[in-house]
Structure formats: structure tokens, C-alpha cells
Length: 409
Image 1 (cartoon, rainbow, N blue to C red):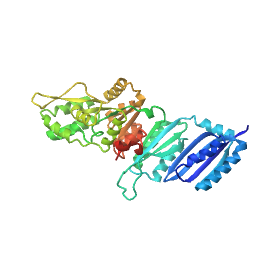
Image 2: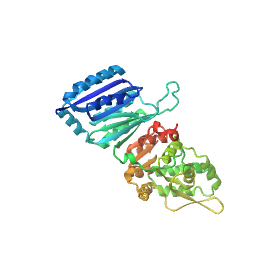
Image 3: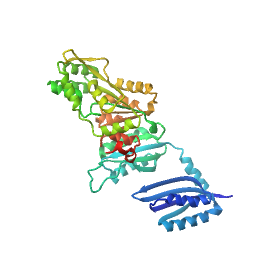
Image 4: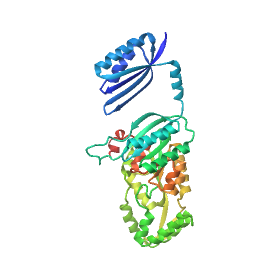
């Protein structure tokens, strides 16, 4: 028996049962399916099937498929594939696979062109493209203002650092975000996600809010500036700033906590993560008082932050209790929680905006700089700046259509 390979291409108006009808013809001739792929764009089908079949039956198979295509109103084409061509193609499938996720409020052809050109320059091939976000309305463009496309990429990446640097530069110039991940089992099995709090889960810096209410904001800001210039370290600056809060009544903290400005997309993100069984942690250089409020609100599993000492008179003493949670401590806590939950570090996610988040962003399997400062964005491997915090879901591979009521916008 002599066997041959035939690539079948079918395109046209999609209809229920089309794939089954095609397969019924192939099944009658005992065709072996070597590869198959299908996409549906605006009810237009594109179906490719690579078969291996007895060469004595191939002519009859193609004849029957042509009749069926005419009957159901689709276009069909055939291409013979030699043994050598097939073996060369099959050999390329063993190369590394990656997922490139592209996000924006909207995506233009020019933006996708720029991303695709970077992929091509580094010798990578795009195997598949799928949309993760829901379809936009042309009559009501203000609804569902987000667009996300996921590229499945194959090839050998010689310089990953240079590749990601180009993506980050394009992100800054073009108003879209990227995530580039190896397409392995860990990407599909993330289990622990750790968040910074201030300017990440909430759109505020709690120490600044406390300072404003206590009338010492300018003094606190001056210390912060000294720390940013490298004149004093984080622990020293934190100690000095906390000292300025001495005498602030705890009722002020309660009022701030009850009115925290929650970041866009946080409610949706937390709902989906809890439904899907993720363990969630807050690792913050802020204060436990506010973190515990978010913990109760969202059912967060772990919280590590800095605890302000409160005197018997219900006022802040100007001191803190325990060790300061700084950048190195955040990274150590991420590893500790992963060990406690028996989660491989590659299955962890970290999200933060500041320089003190970089150690945990670089430690995690997936580190995401969220609306981050330029230096943080340049150093992190993935960045999210164009949409809300629920954009993290797309980096994890979620589709709007799969999220149901839990993920409704």
C-alpha cells in the first residue's frame, strides 16, 4: 500500500455540522489525520486538515469533498505534501513554543504589524492567533473598551532579553501592553498570586493619605524624595515618616479604609481568581490596617504589611511593630507562601508598581509591572498599563467568553 499526504483547505460561510460532514467522507476511506486546525472569524470558516491516505483512494476522496463543498457552498483546495516536506515540518514542531499576549484599549492594524515585525526579526513564527476579549460594539464603542489578542509562537529565541526590550519599547511608544511567556505546563497551572497594595490594588499611597489628614504631608513627601534620591534607605525613610504620624487618631485610619479608591478591574479580577481556586496574598510596604480591610472585602488568603503601633488612647504612637516589609522581604515572603502552599515558584504571579516590588516581580514565575514607574517597567518582564487590573486575567490565558457571570464586565 502506497500512502501519500494531502493538505485540505476549506473556507467559506460557517454552518452547523460542516466539520462532521467532511470527516464522514474522510472516515469512509480510513484517512489518518496528521494535523487539523480551524478558526471562525465573523462566521467565516477557515479549516485546514492534513491527511495521510492510500494513494489509490485519494482521487475519490478529493472528488467527494469537491461535491460536498459545492453542495454546502464553501471553497476547497488540495495540496500534495511529500514525505520529505512532511518530515521537515514535523521536525520544526519540536522547537520552543511561546505565548505573546497583546493588550490595549483598542488594537489597530499598525500596532499588530509592529508586534509581528519584532517576532519576525527574531526568527520566530506565528502559528496561531486568537482573540481573548469580547467583541466590541460599533454602535456603542464606549462599551467593553479593551482588546486582547494572543499569539502562539514557535521557534528558537537567541536573545530573549533583546526581544523583550524591543517589546517594552514598543509598549511605551504605542499604547499597548505585552506579556511574553514560555508556553509550558506552568503557564497553564498558576496557583498563587501576590499583590502590592498601594497604587496597585488601590489608587492611593496610604502613608500620604494619613499624612494629609494629620497636616504633615509636605514633611513626609520630603523624606520620600530623599529616599528616591538614594540619600537614605527604605527602612530609615519609613521610620522617619511613621514618626511624623504620631498622635493621629485611629478613627481617621478607619475613615480612609472605608473609602479606599479601588483600582479599576480589581473586583472582577478577585472574583475570577477566587472562583478558580487561586491563593491570593497582599505583600505591601503599606500598612496592615488597610490590607486587612481589603482582605475582608475580597477573601484574601495572606497579608503581610507594616503594622502601626496604636496607643491605649487610640492614637498612633509614631512607631511600628515588627520587621519592615521592604523589597527583599516581599520576595522572601512570596517564596515562603509558595512553600507553604506546596506551589512551584514557576506557578506564582506577582503584581506591583514600585521599585520595592522588583525583587518579587523577578522572583515570581510571572512578574507583572502594573502602571509602573519607568525604571520598574524597563526591568520587569511583563507590563500592564493600558487597562485595569483585570488585564492580568488575559496574561493568564482567560477569555471573556469563558468567564461567565463571574467575569462579566
